[in-house]
Image 1 (tube, rainbow, N blue to C red):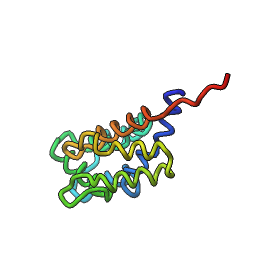
Image 2: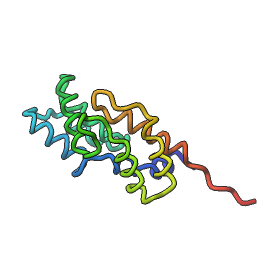
Image 3: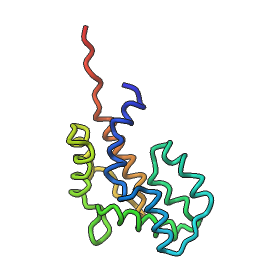
Length: 148
């Protein structure tokens, strides 16, 4: 089973944890709400972020100021609707979103079982959390049996 095939089977993770309207729209809205002008680096990074399968990393491109980036990430994470009032991830909601986005596939169930084992996002950075979930998904894929 090729690495690209495995990644495509696990694409539901990004879908499940994306804010409504997607990352680009959410980051633009969060920046506008905070009065942060978007720099050209943000727009130039969009294609690369999606090509590499990490659109959630776009928030890091909004500003060189770490406090601005953390605020933007917090806003985007809140926009997913998968957080508790204290801004920690609601693991039950995350697991349900993963199962739903996977169409109830065994992969969705395997990843849902891993939501609490992945390290919680630090400074509202979802990229590391999502990478952990994607690794769990890829690791759960079993190559089809070969007939003799």
